[in-house]
Image (cartoon, rainbow, N blue to C red; front, side, top):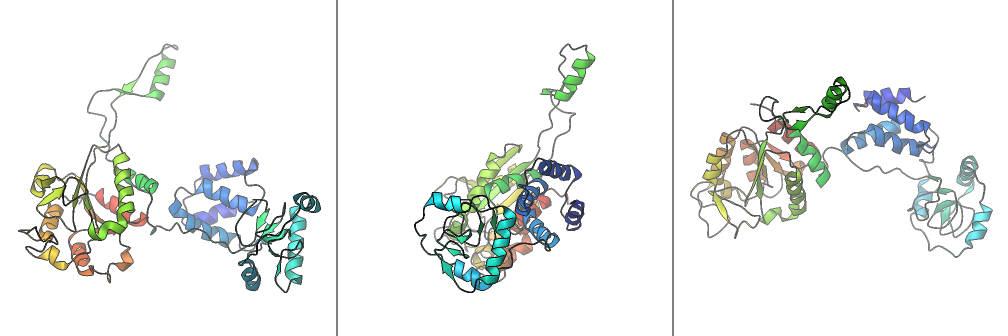
Length: 399
């Protein structure tokens, strides 16, 4: 009966496979959807969506496809206003309430709810019949009933068989900022596996071992092959301090995600403040940490390294364009900061800049001139799910 829904999801650009769809049908056969539309929604989203980025599109497709299904979505605004200001729950005898509403099935509850919506014309609280708050009615919120429909409010006893209120789906669009798990998933894109023509054959091949053992009359015969390892070398350059303080947690998540990704062939991390000059810091404490000459980094690393700058790029334009323009009063830079950025761009074809400031603010915030100059020099992407995805794709493209 849901075949049309499968094709509708596909028509909305959601890549639902047949295997995933068959898993959903099997889960429904087992009753995991709880015989409710809400249960079916959560079950379908869990089994069919591969990424949180697709949740918003799935929600919109679900609402559109099932728009004609009878529900309590359209409630009078006046009623919702009443229920948004609950009173303190009144005292009640739990056993009496449980006994009074025992045996009510979903169909009966729905009919009772519809009758209340037709008959109720004023606010009711603390009662046992009308849609209100703080009472023992099976309709409303912030009270107690062993069954019923929660309208607005928050779940307290988890007894409601249905929830009637405006649906508020979380926004999982691609332009949202990331958490640690999303960082780790995204960095899986940075893979360039080695061929199986180099190195020792020291990786056990389980399927081949089973096949060889069967062919060998059941006598164990181990099969080995050369492992395929990731050949990507990654250089991370973090802007540290100053205007980057508001993004410390976000950048920290990115840092941990990268360092917990053990599949890189080699990983190096250095720090700068606002823009790179003749030295880079080995620690996030740029001002007092140990430094390494920037020229040495450019000389020692081959052009095959992938490079990611992480910084807001918001600074006085003179810091990028002028000799002696460094924000540090005690540091006189012999060459402009943009000169060093251009050297990185010339040395490393696979280089991007991730900016934690939302992209829609780049053109008018403080530092917009420096951001614009950097964008003219290097490929800059917002530090969002969509931005990171595009940046990592760019790193894997050969120019």
